[in-house]
Picture 1: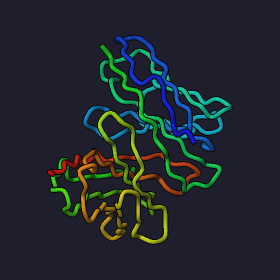
Picture 2: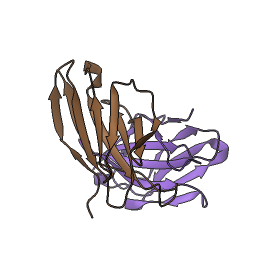
Picture 3: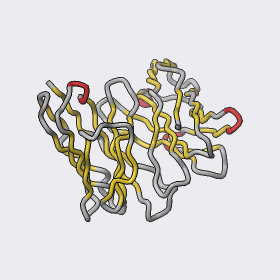
Picture 4: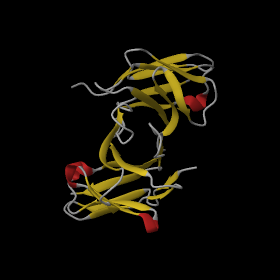
Length: 115
Length: 115
């Protein structure tokens, strides 16, 4: 049973560029959440997708956008990259349809470095 | 708004000694509470979770945590630490009551184990 998978593992971009990160949820999960983890910090919630719609959003600018596909996989897009966007981006999946009290399972993340 | 405080940035214990990692949360209702562990360069692994019911929760790898509403705490404990437990530990609170929830994390406690 595959867990949450994220690609790519590492990515290097320059300021002003755009990036797309990808996530495949754990089998049986329908909800995907994205988190940003800066060095030495705890993860911060970016947004959550369920039924192909953004359901909840954290305190991130609209340079951060996402998408969820019918197969529940998800993308995180970041435009006009800033040096401060350098971080580990974590995807977590869970199942809403099984009830609200289901834990979120995390992937290993994408390490994004901005030069 | 929900928040989590992990007062200890770094803890060092000897192998075989007992461990307690502190976590205090702020949330208006009964929260969802979690402990995750992160090894360097890796994603987050769920150790244990509390949604409702018994306030003493058992997790993987011999960890347990106790929800104390009166103290707004959810401390993590282990009776005998192994060298492989060295990692960073994150406490998180979820906004209960919704079909899905977002996690708010503390800043983490780094655990070092002396052989």
